[in-house]
Image (cartoon, rainbow, N blue to C red):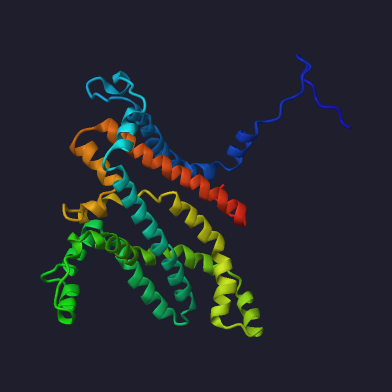
Length: 317
């Protein structure tokens, strides 16, 4: 074996170039390309985590974060023992699970249907129609709901009046809130959410379909045995990400649809944090509630990722 070179002064082995530095020099252009993204997350996601400590303090603005006294888990205990805790948790989980069960599979089905359309012109038309609602702002979306569901002039209530005679005030009935929120969200986002599945479908080898046709497989069998397994890793990754944001129900839409009559079904953790933190100025308490929400989402993400890795060897890490 060749002898390793020794440094003349010390007699020690010559050090190899640092692997990280060598990798940076080799792919410097790629790292330069991703640098703005890294800087964005550091500045806007990680540095603000410095303020999380106010969840464990009695924050006083004049004393600042470091000068405010520590109170430990007092704010968490107050939230867990409050009258609103179970209602907030039930509503947030209910909307999140409802949205996952309905809103997750529909884009998959839409992508599979669009992929089977032979006419390219019709396929592009369907994609354009289903993508368009995604670009509506939340305020415009809720305004459309108010117009269509109005008990006096709403199109839906006009049809109900013709058939049954009694209009329904959908936006003040707690029983209707979750369904209106979820299904309007499905209508708005299903086209946009199907893009990634369509991209995954284009990566499936066409020869698999040709071989299946030769064997006499119909369209449904090819979808079930070729297309779905082909996009299964994409479905798994997106399911993990969706489970990791189960309690992160959109604040803006809920807040705009919320009123005193449907509060029983529409009050969620995000709106509670807004009322206590922004309106009432209870910054430490609202930070504790928000931190609790984030921790639960993080735990769900870890658990679902671990389950997915054990079941089908597909996971985020």
